Length: 227
Image (cartoon, rainbow, N blue to C red; front, side):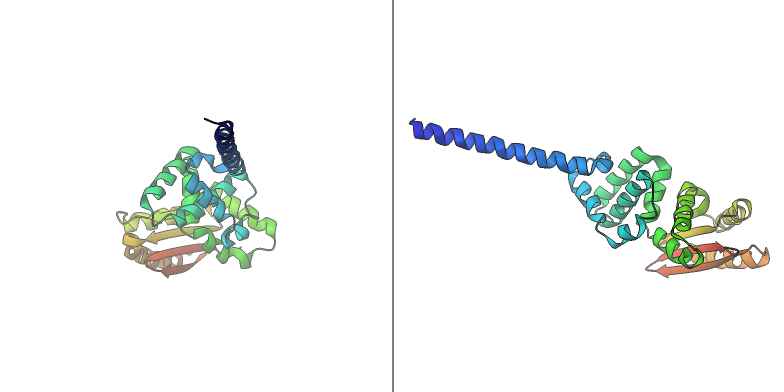
């Protein structure tokens, strides 16, 4: 092999090493910049969580979420929505969120995924007087989500759901309470909505109810009258 051939081989090897090093550095930088979501452990999903920070919902809500934990849950909650047509990746991300943040964290992420934060903010925005009040309202909602929201399943008992909501309204007196029914539970949700409407009147519970429904999805928001 001639000296020119040796130089060509050496230069090719050097360039290959340099390219590998550059790619490794880029990978390390990307992982550092997304260190809050490294628990996802899937580069394609990490990229997707990063894309959520360019979305309108992120721009709207991130100013109301002051803790790093809630900001991460906002990112992965929006990502869950993007993955709804990819059941395998959706299921994998749900498991990762549960492993990292437990049931409470997963419920917050799913709450965001289902658009319930959007409906909650839309319902209360005209009733508050400051940005700080909205921050406290959302933090209180997420800190007590299991006592402020019911997700209706098709197998649920209509009477038990209505009784559960009644007890929580009277015992906890939340500012807002949400009931969510989707898909196969939609028709059950409609019956529950009618019973809750009657319940508020008969027992003079100081809440008013609004609801949104679209594409077999029903969201009921019960708001305390004195806010």
